[in-house]
Structure formats: C-alpha cells, structure tokens
Amino acid sequence: MINRRELFAKFKQREPESISPPYFSGEFDCVNCPAPCVDSCDRNLLEFDNGRVKFDPNKLGCNFCKECAIACESIGKNVLNLSNLAVINANVEINTATCLAWNGVICYNCLDICKFRAIEYLGMFRPTINDKCVGCSECVSVCVNNSVIVRGN
Image (tube, rainbow, N blue to C red; front, side, top):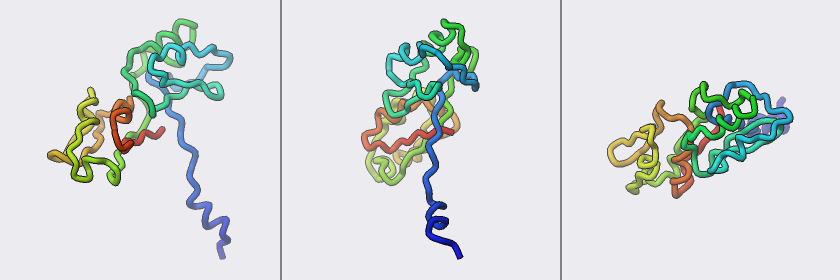
C-alpha cells in the first residue's frame, strides 16, 4: 500500500531549470568573476547567482547586441563568447487558455515583435511557436495576458 507522502511526491514540481544567456560556451568559469556581462546588459536580462550567469526571460527580451559576450571576453573569460551561437537554451510556449488569439480576440503582439518569424498563426488566430525560435523572450514583454511562458531546457 502506498502512503500519502509517496502519493503526493509524484506531483511535486521540479525546480525550474536556469536559462543560460546567449553566446554561452557550455562551461561556467565564473569563480571570482566581477561579472561584467551582467553590467553590460542594457536591458538588465542577466543576473549572477551561485557562480553562474543566468538569463531572466521575464523582462524586455534579448536583442542579441553582443555586449555581454564582448564584456566576458574583455576580462579573458570564455563563458560567453562571440564564436558561440546567439541562441538561448529555453523552451517557449503559449498558454492557450489565457492567450487572447486562442480565445477569439485578434492580437498579433507576439507575431509583430518576433524578428525570427518563430510564431505562426492558423489564419487570424491560434499562434504557435515554430522551430525558428531562439528563446530571446521578446514575445514575453509584449504579451498583455502574460500567456507566453519561457522555461529552461
């Protein structure tokens, strides 16, 4: 017989994965780092936590200006490097229950802001995220219902 603790442990939410910034090398070498990448981001999208640089998708969205990678390289670090892809390791989803366009209201905010053409509509409604998405979270900042969700991989 299963006890209550074991039963409800199945529903336990896992810790959200942190989201690495663009140009990430895959290796953190941030011990004793003054984190110039965080200071260089005009949109305040980066934060330094437990010796790691993390991307916060719930702000303006990354425009891939390269300043974070330039700042990291300027102090001899290779955590953020311009030779790496300008992609953010995140899954972007649309909450269809709260999305205006999924509920019969004409809204193209996410479509209009996405320069990567990663959002497709079925006619005038029902937006979906396609494989062109780079995780920049620009669409998060313009969604009036907060229906765009960005999670770490």
